[in-house]
Image 1: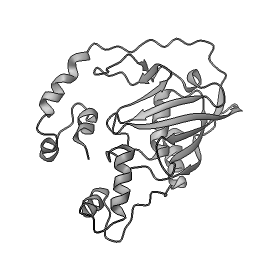
Image 2 (image 1 turned 60 degrees about the vertical axis):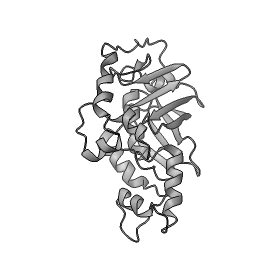
Image 3 (image 1 turned 90 degrees about the vertical axis):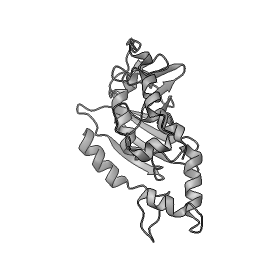
Image 4 (image 1 turned 90 degrees about the horizontal axis):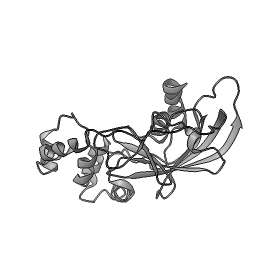
Length: 238
């Protein structure tokens, strides 16, 4: 695994273990000191123009570059904020919400305000999903973890009339297990899967331990437990 991804994604205020400090070459203090250079950062102001009617959206969220594909089909209200959509995608995909993220559409970027932002962005707490997606086949990019750079394509597949009450957030279908956090993007994930196929590989035991697997257990890249995911979505959002 590459140390650069940790330098980009570690959060201010974390306590770093001696092992991690060693892994990063003892450069954490210098790196942290550079974070304050944009301490006066303010997000761009989002202007609302002709907002779409309240409706139920069916989205397909696909992890770019994954082969076989890793994706989730989700129904939700179009009135949710992008900050809420981030939380829903985290649960639906299986991420652990450790890192920064952003949404991108065209030349516009949407993220949580933070003082070390390197570009002008809109605040995800101010923008609703329907502000960006309002026609079927509309697209939006979601990037999670700027180190591993997990890029997701979001496609609006279907728009349905909303009832008086909000439709619960739910995954209708999904394929593929979520990659482990900090595995090193799509390339690192593919490398891990290849190593796990070969018990004689010099890094096999290291990856088994890192994944928390005991002898005889396997990491199944095709496993997706939709009932567990929907139970968590129901608890968190419905």
